[in-house]
Amino acid sequence: MTTRRVFLKSTAAAATVGASILSQPQRVHAAGSDVLRVGLIGCGGRGTGAAAQALIADANVKLVAMGDAFDDRLQLSLKQLQKNEKVAGKVDVPKERQFVGFDAYKNVIEASDVVLLTTPPHFRPLHLEAAVNANKHVFAEKPVAVDGPGIRRVLKICEEAKKRNLSLVSGLCLRYNNGFQELTRRIHDGEIGEIHTLQANDYRGGIWVRNRQDDWTDMHWQMRNWYYFTWLSGDFNVEQHVHFLDTCAWAMNNQYPVKAIGMGGRQVRTGIEHGNIFDHHSVTYEFENGAKLFSSTRQIRGCKNDMSAQVVGSKGRAVYSERKNGLTIEGQNNWTFDGEINNFYQEEHNQLFKSIRDNKPINNGVYMTHSTLLAIMGRMATYTGELVTWEQALNSKEDLTPPKYEWGPIEMPEVAVPGKTKLV
Image 1 (cartoon, rainbow, N blue to C red):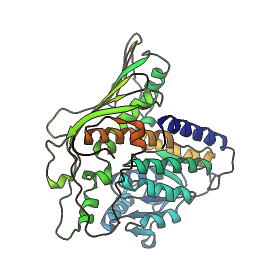
Image 2: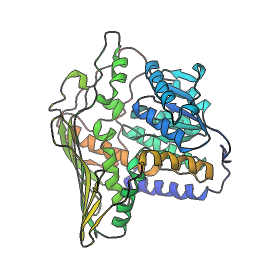
Image 3: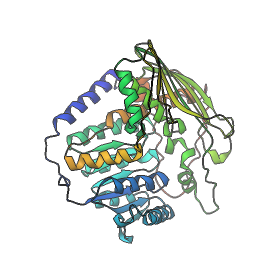
Image 4: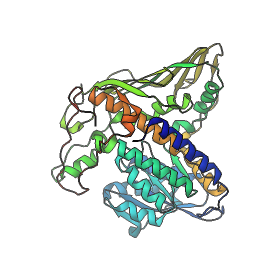
């Protein structure tokens, strides 16, 4: 069994190993004049945006391969990129490098030097492992897994990426926000004192729903409507709320809670079209030193929205928010960020490609995996009603992988019932 202490120690050691190999020769396109071939796996809206950002990030890159479970998604993404004046000249994806189906990722990886992983989160461990084993640099959209077995798999992959001198940049984009970076530096410098309480809010309305069509099999429908199935998305507190949970962990100097308890359910999104995820979650996390993180998230239309994090210490309170003038410290050291916020989605890719050119690989694997587990831990607590420890979440045997990836029948997942759903 992997304990929390061993887990944190091993990932910290991996970071040290990563630093020691920066002087090793880069195997892929270290010279700034070489073309870097980019492959996109997952051609939804986020994938299309990531591809455009990747093509803007470097003067000598080309999108050469695309893969998706569905051809119509691939064609729409390709058309949008070809119409984008900023990147159209860098799009070179002929029919023979357009791949469709569950195995499309294999062909995209083979054709590429840098791989963008933007499929539903369930597939991240599989695709990340394949890319790293093929010696490819990676942009991995958040989150990076949906269950404990996936987390353990990703941890091993991230260590392997360091050994291979590969860059691995996470889609936890708030860490690339210059305002968030400045506020975090001030917190780490002690401007709010010793942290004792944190709060992460993600209150927003509903999002898209894909209603089932007559010619769709069970698997077609679940894949098209992936956001609403825990095995594919991890539930929205993992798929979306992971951003502000990660921000709180970052403020805590990348320390993570030892236990969590919470509640959640389906009050509004109760139809079959909403799969088996909840529409609200509330979790209380506790750190080893007794500090508490109160996490609340919901997706219900017609309600007040709030996406922010607050960090309270012995000398004051810090607020993280993407709103204008939303980065503040109140207390003994009052401060408001008044600079221009950078395009942090773009900055992720700028840093990725610069690291490749400079032969100074970036590896965000430690925090992207820890923060994904933090979100999964909260979901386990809300689904079961049990107190969940870090070790239980990390070592959980709950594997959400379906029996097979085929366009046919697949069981409709049950909706969790706190008090009845068992902790695995």
